[in-house]
Length: 243
Ligand code: NAP
Image 1: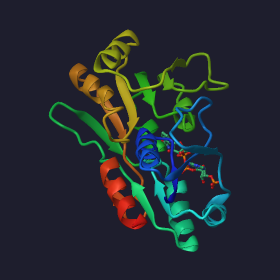
Image 2 (image 1 turned 180 degrees about the horizontal axis):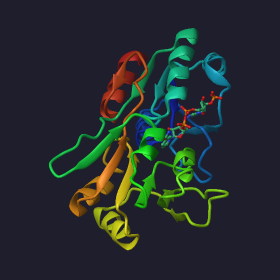
Image 3 (image 1 turned 60 degrees about the vertical axis):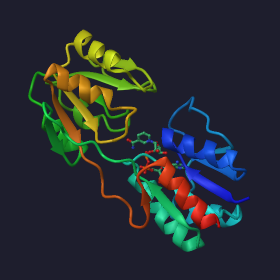
C-alpha cells in the first residue's frame, strides 16, 4: 500500500482518487477550498492552501507521502510550481496531469490571447458576452462598462454590478444546454480559458454552430518535469513509481 497525495479540483483528480483507492492505496485529495460544496472524491480529503512550496514539502514529509499527483486545472499555475519545488525538497516523485488543450477546427472563429487582460481588451464595444472563466478574474471585464456581460459560475459572486447577469450552474453541460443559453441570453461573444477536455467543450461546439467569435485564453506554460495527458497514463506512472 502506498500513500498518495492528489492535488485536486478537477474531474480527473476524482477519477484518479477513485481508481487509486480501489487499488488499495491510501489516497488523500487536497482541495483549495474555492468551492463551497465540492464534488467529493474517494479517500480522504484535506482543504486549504499549504502555505507555499515549503508548506507543501513539510506536508509531504509529515504524512510520509510516496507519490504526488498534481491533477489541478491547467490554469492553476501557482500550485503546479509549488508542487514541483515541494516534491524536489521532499524527494517525492511528482507528476502533472495535463489534459490536452483544445484546438480550433473548421468553422471556429477563435481569437487566441495570452492573458485575462488581453481577453477583455479583445472584445468590441457594446457586445453581449458570455464569460466562462470562473469568478476570480472578472475585474478586467467589469472595468469595461461598454460591455453587456453574462457571467456563468458555480459559486455566487459578491458585489457584482446589477447590470451584469449571473448564471449559476455547474457543468458538464450538453450541447443542447449550451445552444439554449447562447440563444436565450442573446450572446454575441464567448470568453473561455483553454481548459481542454470533454466536460467543458460543448460551449465551443455551440459557438461554432451559431457562428460566434470566441476569445480563447491560452494556457500558462506547463510546469517542468513529467506530465501525463490522461488519467490512464497518470495511473500507469503511479504504478511504476510505487513499485
Ligand atoms: P493557483 O493560483 O495555482 O493556486 C493559488 C494557491 O491556492 C496555491 O498557492 C495554494 O496555496 C492554493 N491551492 C491551489 N490549489 C490547491 C489544492 N488543490 N490544494 C491545496 N491548495 C491549493 O490555483 P487556482 O487557479 O486558484 O485554482 C485553485 C483550485 O481550483 C485548484 O485546485 C484547481 O484545480 C481548481 N480550478 C482552477 C481553475 C482555474 O481556472 N484556475 C478552474 C477549475 C478548477 P498555498 O500556496 O497556500 O499552498
